[in-house]
Length: 127
Length: 177
Image 1 (tube, one colour):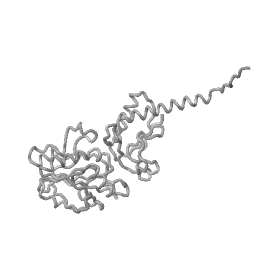
Image 2: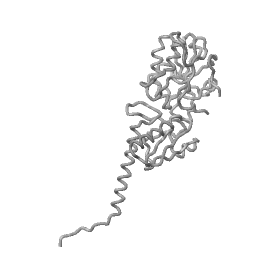
Image 3: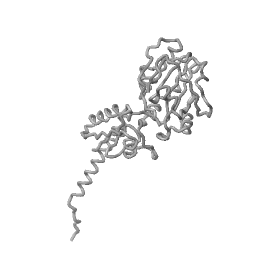
Image 4: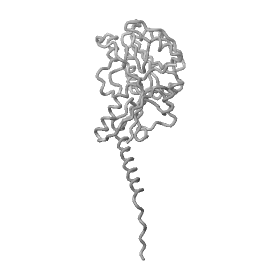
């Protein structure tokens, strides 16, 4: 599983958010490296399509896909919680759902890949 | 950039508000206390705390307290903090305090503000009595253990001693030009 954690140092929530990711990974038995990317400039934010800190990608998918037209910026990111409240931190549940979906994606891809390599069976017509 | 220090006098200002009127700090000189809060629209810390700001104005307004909320962010960097969007946000959240724009950022610089939200609480004499965060838990209003601003307001109003006069503001950085 590819887990990417993009953050901006000046936004204080990234440390707690990273702890939450590691906590859920441990709970779910997920062993994968986390790629940490420190976004330091506005230009880098544009290049990386970074809408705020922290941004967490699982297999390249944002754990809470941003609305279209979101601006790239060196700032803190808003997460919307299950109860509708806004927070600088993604909830444990949001992280858990994203990691579970990421694991399912990999399982499906692995199965599909496996099928591609199975020898194709010719239909056996009755003689 | 050094922030105002405790007991220092408030810096006067006149800024436009979302009600399309000018607001001066001196307009509120008869208040028992004035809390100048640097804030904005987009910041998640502000979003997490803004209902509590409304609650504080509702609870302490009748006691002579006035919150004045100022957005100093560079709109070219954060378009969500534009003046029209400030109006939208205030309407959506039912702001019961003036929400002002500091386009030149001169007020934020004069106060030495760095984060949003960041509170500067002044007493009736205009002296800074509390500086910092609104309370100790941005993430969960139900888990607040230390309501710093409410405690400081109680102290300024003379109902309790002031136990904490300064805390570390937690929030987004002000987006400077």
